[in-house]
Image (tube, rainbow, N blue to C red; front, side, top):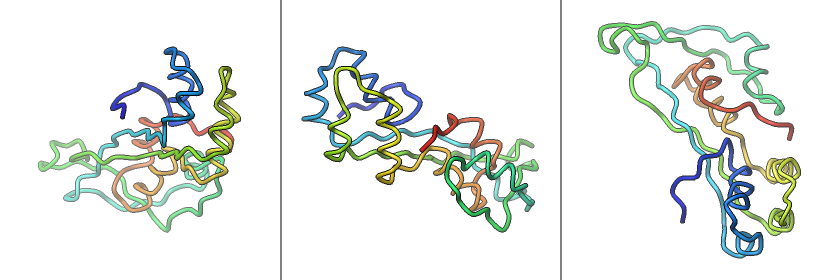
Length: 156
């Protein structure tokens, strides 16, 4: 188990291991999955206020997927409880890529990151932004916060 590897997303961890000199056949044989994570600030429960999200903003967050927009969202306001920041605490957003046989076949000495990422998304890996979109829809964090801490999702 590796605890920290600085990458933008879970597929990039594979290419980072290759860059660090780990032979591709060892990665294929030993890695079961990769998880990328980021922390987003959570809205203060004492002062968060409902708001409507523009469809274009939701699309920016969830592209290239077609996730239906939520009925509403919340925005940061600020109060004494959160020291006028509008946020209190943090929550994790996660991207988990399990290495299937088809993904392992794509791991070679010169792995094509785009092909690896596309296959992972095809097999159900959800991007950090899509995970963050769930936090926005649930009123846990804001669209701006998720966009701030997560990398843009590549084409699926």
